[in-house]
Length: 173
View 1 (cartoon, rainbow, N blue to C red):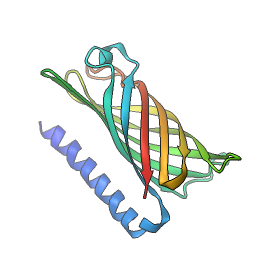
View 2 (spheres, rainbow, N blue to C red; view 1 turned 60 degrees about the vertical axis):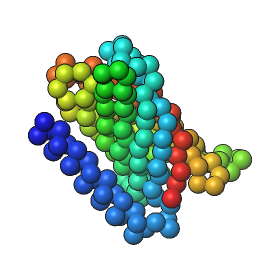
View 3 (cartoon, rainbow, N blue to C red; view 1 turned 90 degrees about the vertical axis):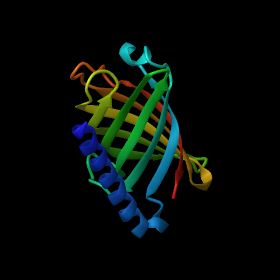
């Protein structure tokens, strides 16, 4: 129980510091809030529910010029389900490199590759595992965006892998 409080406190501090930094640069459009669905590809997670609720924050940084990337992004998401007496959560904290591709229609498409830590509390005690993420972000007009990611992780402490696809609609502030 103490471990869950420590993890929750760390996430709140991370989210608060992200909001504090973004409030100082609110005009720049660096913060994106998003909500949608997570579809687990791991059978152990699908046994609970086929589609999970997803919500998250992403903060864009100037980033590292790694292999021609256009920027970096730090994101914190929450994937959750609650069915009957069963509930589970997955919290990925990911650092990603973004690669922008301008389209002729004025829509910007970003490909991303990231690594991070996934806090998985779906079956058995919660566990922290390393994982990766590949994604696609389409910036539409009016500050709206569509995010599609595939997450892949290791397995630990009886929890299944937190592999799956997330589809989210976002709004950039």
